[in-house]
Image 1 (cartoon, helix red, strand yellow):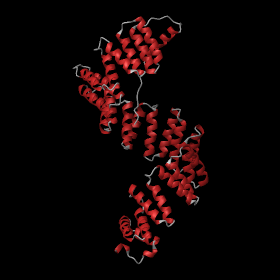
Image 2 (image 1 turned 180 degrees about the horizontal axis):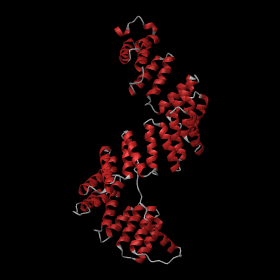
Image 3 (image 1 turned 90 degrees about the vertical axis):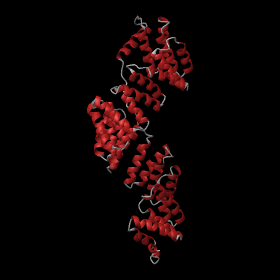
Amino acid sequence: MNRKLLFPVDDESSDIVKRYEQFLSGTAPGYFDVEELESIVEYYLRKGRTKDCTKALELGLKLHPNNTALKTKRAKIYMATGDDLKAIRILDKLAETTDYEVVLLKIEVLIKLERTKEARILADKLINDESDDLDNVCLDVAFIYLGQGDYITALRLLEKGDRHNDQNVDLLYELAFCYEQNDDFAKAIVVNNRILEIDPFANEAWFNLGQLYFALQEFPKALEAYEFALAIDENDSLSCIQKGHVLFQLDQFEKAIEVYLDYKKMTSFGWQTDIFIAECFEKLERYDESISYYRLSLDAHTDNYDALTGIGICLLEQEKYIESMTYIRQALAINENAADSWVYLAEAYVGLDDIDNALTSYIKAISIDPDQADTLMAIANICLERNDFEMSVKYYLAALELDDSLEFIKLFIAVSYYKTGDLEKAIVFLRKAVDENETAATLFLELCPEAINLNLLDI
C-alpha cells in the first residue's frame, strides 16, 4: 500500500536560493549568514543536487570557517552521496557532540554502518531525557529508523512519544504508518480515526483510512473514506482514482466510469485511465465501447500489453476468434510468460474447434503458472473427450487439489476412473459428487450408460 505524503514548499528557502544563484551569476551582490547558507544547502540536498550543495557549503565555510552547523552539513552531504565513513569521521570530530542535530545524524550514520548498538545507546540517551518535547524527540529518532525500514524499532519509539503526548498529529501519522507496515491494520485504523477526532478535515487521514479498508477488502467503508477525502479536496487525484477502483470492486461499473473520467481530467495519465474505463465496459459486456477505450490506450502506447490483451478478450467474447488471436499473439510477443494470455489463446482455438492447438496453449499456460484450477480442468475435459482417461484423471485431480468447488469435478473424476476400469475409486468420487448434487448420478449414467446395471451407488 502506498503512502500519501505531503511535501511542504518552503517559499522563504526558495527566495534565498534565488538570491544565492543571482549572486553566483554576478547579477547581484550578497552576503549570507549561517542560517541562510544552511537553508541553501538543505534546499539542494532535498533536490538531490549534491554538487550544488558542496559549492554552497564551501562558500559558507569560507565566510564562517569554524561554524559547527555548516560542518554538520558536510557530513549530511557525505551521507547523501553514500560516503558514510567520511560522514562519521566528521561527526566524531565535532566538539559539540551534544548538539541535537549532530546526535541525530550520528544515530543515522551508525545505523547505516551497521553499528546498531552504538546507535541504540545514542537514541536511548535522547529519548530517556525527560524533556517536555519528548514526543517530537521520539518522532525525530523514529524517522531515522523508518528511513532504514526498521519499523519495529520505529514503532517502539512512536508509541513512547504517543504516551507522552497523544495529540501530536505528525507523530500519529507515522504511528499509523508503522502499524500498517507491521500488518496491524486494525491499530492503524484506530490511529487514523484519532487524527480525525483532532482534525475532522484531515484529508490525508481520510485517504489513509480508505487505503486500509481497501486492503482489508471492506469496500463500502473504503468508499466512504475516499468520498470524505474528496469532499475536503475535490482535486485530490489519488482519492479520486482509488474511489474509482473501489467502485469497480463493488461492481458499480457505471459509477466507476464516471469517476475514472473525472480522474482523467485531473492528470496526465490518460492512457492508463483508459484501461480502467475499458475494463468497466468489459464487465458491463459493452464490448465495442470497451474496445474503443483499449484502442485509445493502445494509440498512446503501441506496446501496451494490457490494452492488447483487453481487446483480445473482448473479441473473444464476441466470438471473433481469429481477430482475437491477432491481439493475443501481439500481447504474447511483448510478454511470452503471461499465463493468462496463453489461456485466452487456447479459448480462441477452442472456439475455432482447433483442439490440438488449444491443448498446446493450455499446457503452455500451466507450465508458466501451475496453480490454475480452471485451466487444469479444461485440459482434463479435452483428455476426457479424447478418451485419454489416464491423463484426464491426472489433470482433474490436480485441479481438485487447488479448488474442490469446481462444478461437477468429482463427477468427472468418477467418470474418468470408471473408464480406466478403477471401479473402487469411481464409486468413491461418484458418492461425493452425488452428496454435493443429486443430479450427478443421472449425469454419470448419461456419460457412462453401460454402467446402468452396476448400481454403483449401492455397492
